[in-house]
Image (cartoon, helix red, strand yellow):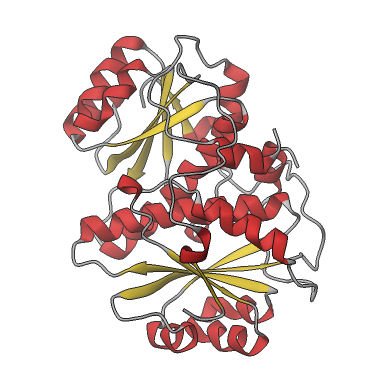
Length: 171
Length: 171
């Protein structure tokens, strides 16, 4: 798909077909995530790909907004190192935002919908995902083919108008 | 360009041709940024597009790593509200990471290179960009056509290997 079409097709998708995501598609999506730039190229991230129904169901209890994870064809958990300094935590959050967008655009390009979830309950996340001490699960990205309608470029996105967001030369 | 080619072509570009970025290309890049998802769709961002040489030069003094901003064809400054709580600051950082990636992929699709810079000196940034109290300049994204070589899909990116980053079902 053309890049700008993929960018305009991405929307939050939280209802998925039962159809699995095939391995080559998932590899491409993960490859997009891996290539994301990061502060000093530190790549402070690990991706846990979950597809087992039982595991997805348990993972969906990390937060009240994570119900769609149980119904996803696959979920990518973004795991990052814990950090003492707020400056570092903020930098990691920014880099994980970049990873998230890489993953979501690469998925949209393949007709695969994505829906974020925060990950509040670290105990549940750790139990399901098995990440070691010193790490935390920052985000879950639920994925699957949309069960409502295919991804198509959205003409009128639910966003502030461009001329309100954009300032020229100076605010 | 195909989406996956744009994703694989993006690299940090800090040397630019003098050629300006035409208005339709810039509009498309900004449109990609505007469409980015955000926490509760709050869209806590403003984009200041700077193209004037004098303004870019002054802006390049916000940090020692911002020298390329002076030579950019255009720079998008990402401005965000200040926040009292770390939780909110982290959420804004994550959303700005998503915006950044949207902008960079949309630019790469057009053959336009991008290079981040942190924005350390808020006094300088405010003087040049004129944003009001209660806001801060979080990031600068320098842009322009690469002066070294055109953007092409990178076969071997300087990243950790996929099988090191990716875990299956469990860490």
